[in-house]
Image 1 (tube, helix red, strand yellow):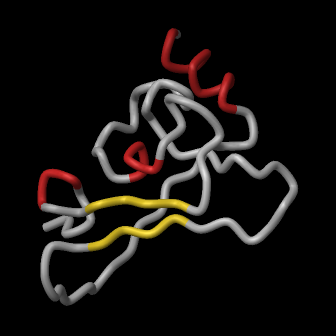
Image 2 (cartoon, helix red, strand yellow):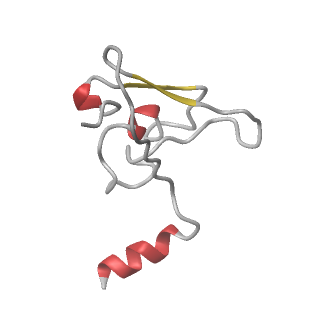
Length: 85
């Protein structure tokens, strides 16, 4: 069970947000197909200022055995070209 998922009560917050469509909820909404600026991921709003953070609060106490992190690849256009065939 993904205890971080919104559908299981996970609530995402972040240090900052780049703009609409880049909010922290994109990190745990289960959608890995939407575009990066269309709710498919989080983007911080501080450019080259660090640190940045993203936090997921779980519903109640949870035991976590595995953590998976998905991020944008170096050349996201290449994946779209492959998918379009």
